[in-house]
Length: 209
Image (tube, rainbow, N blue to C red):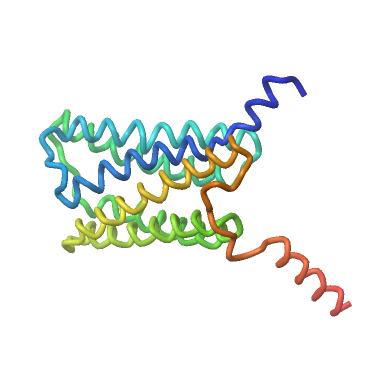
């Protein structure tokens, strides 16, 4: 293994994607709760497209390239979501055409299911990462309400603010801990232990034989 490959393999790519998610989610959330007034929807859409979409996609592709299936799948899927939504938004702003909210319902429902599965999977990684996916799932549920014409925009906005805050903390914590090789910023022990679960299943299988 050459030196350049080794250095890239050791990069904490997840933190890069989560920094992008933090910028996109906080920007969108502060607008949804009316803390930031919207004077230029195009500028906001470009910010969300680049940070929430393209940065996560790039980080996800790199993560998959180095065999980090869980992080790579999450980053590429969420990055694809942000990219798709804000490309459509930008297209609508440039053409003057606006699609009905109900057209977004299938993709939001699918991502709600995906995020709920990620809660279980990330429970084997760390408490803070699991909490982040709980917040993502709840925010998608609020977004389903919005697509069905319920006035849940402020709930979605609060969800995006919390997502951005947790994503930023996790990114800073992993980056700091990896650089210092110390657990300076806690991420929380994983609520579930995959190794223990496999061991218990193995023992149960042996008992039945």
